[in-house]
Image (tube, rainbow, N blue to C red; front, top):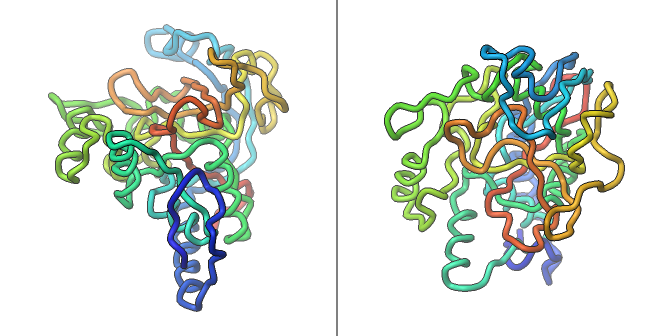
Length: 310
């Protein structure tokens, strides 16, 4: 298989030829991907900031308006990957398709980017288009309807099928003792890991995907270790007119950032910590990452099928 390097998923100069050994590796990859899918039985829930109505203190958990109003959503069953896609998985996809990965030039920036992508089991860093193409390719090689998750699917799973859960951790809270996290990672955890892995990233270091426990559904890293791209275009007013059944987000781009670019929705968090990575908090970014590297953006794919993946 041809190795991938270069800039932002441009075709390599040599079309890959896949040997029998390559085909066997692909089957191992497919088996791994299927084994990582967590079935999420569909149902109905109230999506958004539920703090005032159902929180212990009856106060908003999110001070921003885009997580309101609380509104009813009904979801069909689906599956969601228990992990964000790893560097190893994403680089296999690039190599299989003869694609060149994103290249960052400059001594300091280049080292920073290389440190983010060289550790196999930390989350791959991608823009929205790279994330969308990766999930679509998983669909091609598995025969399953893979896609990016919708915001409604992500939040429903983060809240353990729509329960009134504030943090998408093992117990719905964020627990830290001293400088080290118990069920989330702290800056100290990241700093220590960076030293152990001989990385230059210090407190900005990504962590292995199973560094802390999963939520009750068995899904990891929903409170941090990288923002996750959603299928949806971002609209701060979407909750006021969202359809009840399987909302997909706006049909057309709606909201521009300060630089004049339309934005896609993100969930999770770049780095976990107190008050960060809450289940109802929304974020957005330019899907093409035109003015920045997607150094804190990751991908977790969904399977839109009513039965568990086998």
